[in-house]
Image (cartoon, rainbow, N blue to C red; front, top):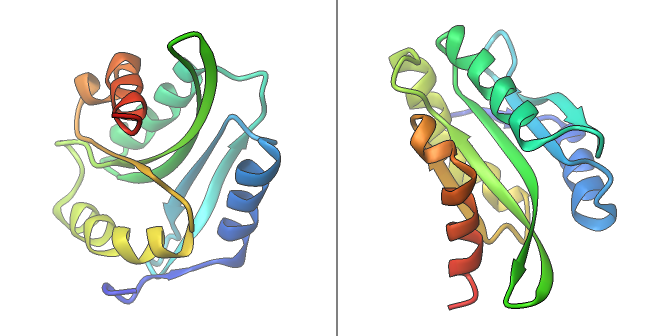
Length: 143
């Protein structure tokens, strides 16, 4: 990756599980403690909610850290039920400069490994995390 950050195999395996089988509602990724690789922090089952997802990202914010994440968004376009995977870069204003730089400079290379991601959302605050914002981004892919 551009920043020298690698990706553990478990990240791609979890992505395939959510992409092909919709096995998870969301996956949270973080950098390892030595900041050298992206790893899976949590895979959440379908019994979880969007609020659980937001709460998990807010936990990272309380540690002054960033996160990557994928959420399986279900919505209606017209009367037709739809499902889209949305990639999030959670980079809160309170995160350290080093965290922001590493996550930002590694994002594109990580996304290239996650083939098929069409909805990309960078979130810096609660407004960006609002479900209405996420739905707008998913629906805009149809226009």
